[in-house]
Length: 283
Image (cartoon, rainbow, N blue to C red; front, top):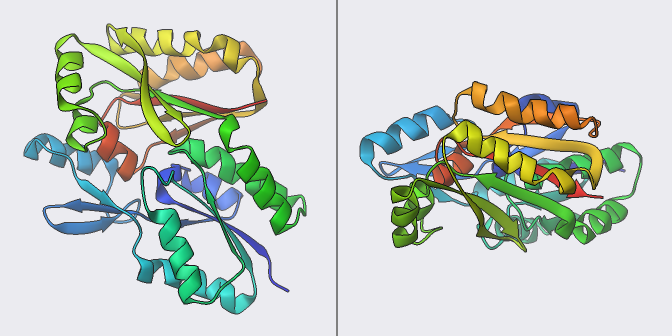
C-alpha cells in the first residue's frame, strides 16, 4: 500500500525549508519572457523578473503547468500506489488544477484528489501545510481532502501593492484605475475572496507607514485567527520594511508560528516589487 502525497504548485510560495520539512512536492508554473519559457522557482529568480520588467516596461506572461510535465510528476506515484492530494492556485486565476485533472485522466490514475484552493501565494500554502500535518497525524486521504476543501473559505489572504502597474499590465486590473492610483500615490490592499482578487482599503504614504497601518488594521481579525500560524509573504523588497510587520505580529503574543516567505516568480510577475501580505486561517 502506498502513501499519501501532498502536492501543490509553485504559486504556493513555500520556502525550501518548509517544503522539505513537510515533504511537499511542487509542480512549477511557467513564466514567459522574450518568447522563452522558464519554470517558476527553477530557472529564474524574482529579482531577474523585476529587472527584465523594468528594462522592457512590461511584465512576463505566466502559464499553467504543461500536461506532459504534470504527467511526469504524477507517474511515479501511480506506479508506487500512492494517493495524491493536489492543492492548486485558484481556478479563477489559472487552469493548473484542470491540467492536473487531465494528467490524472490520461494516466487512468483515480487516486488523485484535486483541491481548488480558491486562493494564491501562501493562501494556498496555509492549506498545504494543514494537509501535510493531517497526513503526518495518520488521517486518511479522504478525510484530509474533505477537511481542506471544506475550510477554503476560512483562509484570509490580502496584500498591499506598491504600484498597480504590474497588475494592470497582466490584465488583473483596469489600466485607468492603475494610472489614477499611481498618480495619487495610493497603495491598495488587494483581498482574495472566493478565488478572485478585489481592492479593499487604499492607503497613502511611504511604504513603511502603509505596511504599519495595514497590519494594525487587521489586529482584531488576527486575534480571532487560528493561532497555529500566520504568514508574512513579500516580493522583492528591502527586508527592513518587512521586519516591523513581523515584530508587530510577535508583539501580539498570539501566534504559535510566524512564517516569513518570499513570493516566487508568478506572484512577483503579477504584483511587482514591494508587495507584502499577511495571511492566516480564521479560527
